[in-house]
Image 1: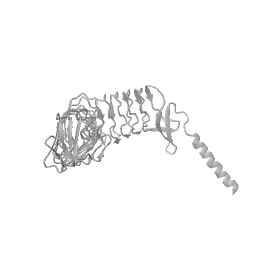
Image 2 (image 1 turned 180 degrees about the vertical axis):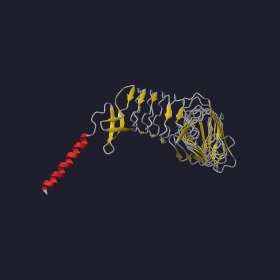
Image 3 (image 1 turned 135 degrees about the vertical axis):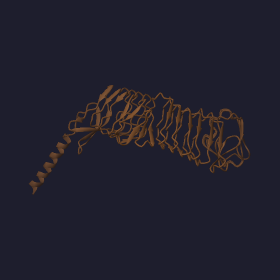
Image 4 (image 1 turned 90 degrees about the vertical axis):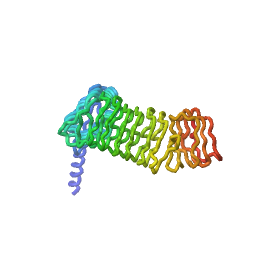
Length: 400
């Protein structure tokens, strides 16, 4: 019995030693993880400084099937990547901020590309989506400002591209990515589009005008961030504008349609050319900082039938009852303003950074003044409280 047990222990030890010995020791400048059971390798990092990189098919007996999360992130000098026909997955952020990357092949073996895999690869010139790709993450080519067309193999079962080189799902219901390097100043969206994905038009600086789908219902986060779009007129199908949707864009005029319900947080923040905003009756939610630093807005106008919001005679945005002051139009040239007598709270950033206002009168009804409510109001020298000043005033409410 003892000999039998010793024999089993010896065999287990031998097998373990063989298994450990089978892990490749020399992977060059690549960092890797190995799956001993599947005999596959994932490249997780790169320590070299070559401008052209050839990814090997194998390290010893391990087949390279994946480029891992952030594996080549911020490798600024890489200009070309050659992937083997064994690669199946490019994980999230794998090549983000490879700002010199001009060319990468997508082999037929490739099945999925993760979120923001090529974020801000601003030298990338081409992107051809093969017939076997099944999954593309959010913002795969966001910020690729030299990319002028995305071409999808017509046999792909999941994705397609239109005549402008725009990436869509197969049924063209979701617009996934506009090529930011396109020189076109206008774009006619397929009428089948129901949703614009997050980051879809980010940094598309040349694009000024879009004819939107009449069936569009939702626009994702940061969809038009830092874009050159000047006008946006939506049909009555639109219901939701996502977080930071038009943040820092060049937009001057927007028409939201009659059924939009949600204007997301920071949706129009830093839109310094937007001169006015009409809030339809359908809107039930305006997110925090939705109009922050919209320095050209002179008026907020709210449909009288809106049940959640209202505006006063000076174009100041309130809740329906006038109990919360939400946004003062910081492009207004008025020098004096009296807060409504029934107002109980002045929201964060409500007046920031109004330049023309020199005097504000705050009624005794106001109980709270939020964070940076009057911050950077450079010429505001006279704050008059009618009665006792509110107990709850943020420390930075009047920060210069």
